[in-house]
Image 1 (cartoon, rainbow, N blue to C red):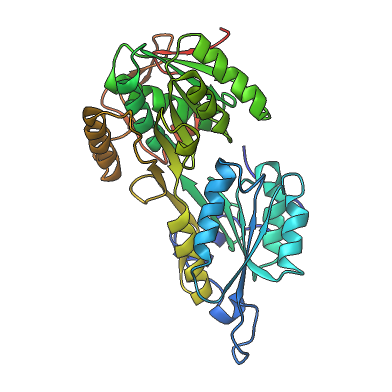
Image 2: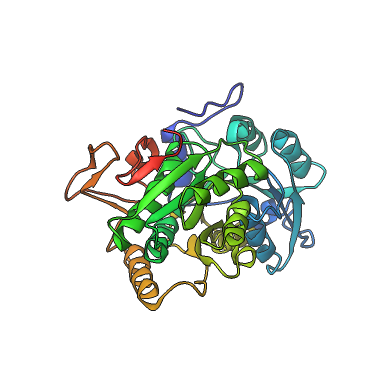
Length: 382
């Protein structure tokens, strides 16, 4: 699928490369510092306006809160004014226009553009003095306004470590995971968790309940309870808000793994670890370069190696052996000596999906086309 920008001037690959002086992921020059601040070279310095658009509640104990924590880190930068807008899903384009116009923001960060991405890219093309930064990978790197940037974190690496810890902790050898929907990015994290589980215990099974993208917290909790009642003694999640999963686990006296941000407070007895985003570094470094009018990367990708993801501190139920194995596995991923998806890997029908000797690393296009569930994973209801 390609992102097209209707009725706006776009740039083909040659234009982009010429403007950037290199590939899309390479460093490119911004407007000068005075242009970034919206002032003339002779005027007095003013605060750089940075707007953040959240697709939901910034205190959702999930995806948006992870970005809100990074936004708070920006307040430590001198000469910066932060403007935050919550629940902008469905009105992203209009809210972005308000930030760029009346609020005079020269950096706009969007946590989840979704279907609004073409319109937001059109706005970026119309407002070349404003930088638009998006969470996620661009759908079409060849046709992008030169004042746009993307952050992509490999959360599957952190989920892999969570799965490994869960595999050590499960006595029933049955782990339940509540997921949104079987899209490639979701399946990637589900399978990464499952592969981690099997590293700890080759006999462990992962049961997945897909609840849909628009599931309410109550529906998520119901799915988690069903998994617990079905024999799972560890619960995990891959959806925007995992708090209900941890609360159900604690109420049932079983263990759990968190997601997106630190959820240990909701399961003080049974919390194991969690897969978290760590956007503070990417936010702060990029905005600081923009403020200084220095070159910046328009595509920043990475996992543990770039410090874009992390695992929540271990809970009391994580044993010494599990900690040591998880720490070693995390270090191998961080230094490039390992890959989550290293063959041979079979799906749950017995078909080989990653051949022996093959490794699919973070930015590999095949990971974005994933349609399978790994060996040992079963979908509840099928």
